[in-house]
Structures are given as C-alpha cells and as structure tokens.
Length: 113
Length: 113
Figure 1 (tube, chains in turn green, purple):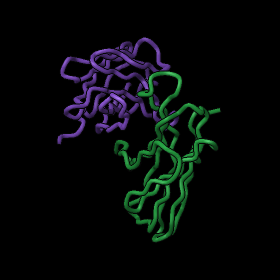
Figure 2 (cartoon, helix red, strand yellow; figure 1 turned 180 degrees about the vertical axis):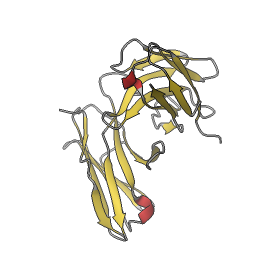
Figure 3 (cartoon, one colour; figure 1 turned 90 degrees about the horizontal axis):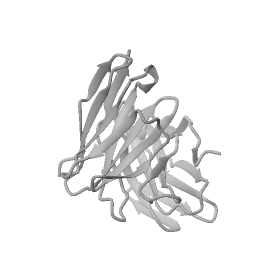
C-alpha cells in the first residue's frame, strides 16, 4: 500500500464547476498536510496547508481534512482553464522527523471550456 | 523575497561521470530538502538538511549524497551516473522548525547518456 494515494486522473471538469481532488494516507500519526499544484514543465507550487480536522478556505480553494478516515481533499470552486495542472498531495511522515514529506503521485486536472 | 534558486538548470552527463547540483534556499529558511522527479516514480524524497546536518534520508543508494553549508545553501552530488538517474532534481526550502511548508526551486534537469 502506498503511503499517500491519489487518483492519477485525468479529472475533467467544465469551466465554472467545482473540482474535487482526493487523497488518502496510510499512517495515522501524520500531522501536516499540503496541496501543491504543478504545471507541466514547472516545479510544484504550494497552494494549501492544513493541520487540523475540518475545512480551510483560501480564495477559490478549500482543503478538507479528516484524520479519522485518513483523507484530505482539495476543492476548487469556479474552476478556470488556468487551474489545469497536476495536483500533488503531501503528508509529513510520522515515524521520523516530521520534516520528511511524502508526496502522492498526483492527480491531473483538466478544465474544459 | 527571492525564491529558491537552483543551478544549473540543465545538465547533460555521460554514464559513469559524477555531477554536483546547487540550491540556495529562501532567505531565513534553514531546511533544504532534495527530491527526484521522474514520470514513472513521481516525486521521491532524497534527503533533508537542517543546520548543516542531514536530518532525514530517503531510499536512494549511497551514490546520492548531499551537504549543507553554514549559509543554508545546499549541494547534492551523484557519483557514477547511471541512465536511470536522468530526472528532474528539485530542491525545496522551509523554515524547518515546526513549519514544514516547503517551497520549491525551478529544478535541475539532468540527462544521462
């Protein structure tokens, strides 16, 4: 079982709709969770971090964390073509220093006009 | 504030050679992590340095090594290059003390022929 799992996609969403990206993780001790966006040929860009159960909103982005179910999700409202990218979920590793971060393989999101 | 910088941006090496990559973190960030990204394996953690000490290490052979200097700049070295080492090498910096939000540099694209 992978430590951090994401559906590879592609996830195709019409412009203006809500895109929902999901991620599950295997280790209950993980404490910090991140979402990165990576455009083709570019490096990952941090867009959200979340540390406690519940929702965290930042503009059109909402991160949701459920530690009991070991999943974290990212919602993108009013999806724009510029949101088309690969979204990486990242989780701190619980059994070593929390500074070790494990990345999922990413979900490719495509926003269709 | 300047972002993470990496040099060189592109490298072409021959099998058996060695290579050194450099990373300058965001000012004030003391933690530098290195990742290898390939289409097949995704983003793989190599190692992390904090205050000139290696704090975490991923599952890579000993041919991959790194170091960090007193100004937090970091280098990674790959000896006896193999064709499979062709990848995008990314470095990311973070504050490192309780804050693990990582910010990535543009990466070094290494091609081994």
